[in-house]
Length: 314
Image (cartoon, rainbow, N blue to C red; front, side):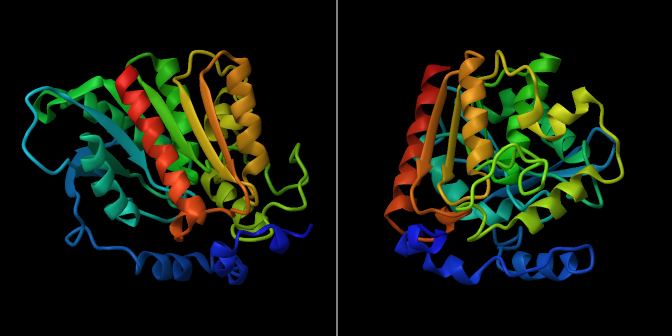
């Protein structure tokens, strides 16, 4: 069957998407169009705070506290990393979702406004996420949070950064992570190129296309030549050692360009002895959960249940 025949009817709007040609010349207009759909920080339900990044620059964090009375015991915490192909986006793109999730789970959510490529190539976005993790630990008492129940979560490029952050935190050994929730994560810079180890004629046709994906990875890399150690943080799918990573939830649509890389990563995690929960949703392209439908509702329930288990078991 052709991709359009496999598409869930709830996601028909995606048939008209993915028409942009991504380049350094078109990126400013794409950013302006997409960012115009977000709330401003002043309109958002989250509270902005500032810290200092690893290179001395200012880094914004957005805090989402649960509604209701203050808790007497420390609550769990989620570090959230937004999507946008590494080249656009900000925490406010998920503002209502994060605010509602904080209340549903009675957790503090810290969303990091990491700096974007190509202006800030690898490893700056990843180091910004690591700075946010360190900020959480440093402020655990005043925030009344239990850092032993810290989960990292991200969508798309944010899921890729979350996967890399879990590896980096493991390697540096400073901050424990109780779990990682990766929603259609962007993990493998080879996807959509001739170097990709997977071929699937049904993926990446609807929604996020290979051309945009390659452009975004090129922006993240910049002009750098990466050694083997760096490559496994730049592109987590290429990391050789996945042992001792936290329990992992991965979800992806069956029509998503990232299907093959996400399933392959889940299998490698399992072979490394990591507890893995994997969901593949039929008829769903990349970013399907931005549109209403039964599969979107199921995905939201799956994410919520996974987070509950992770913060309960820690």
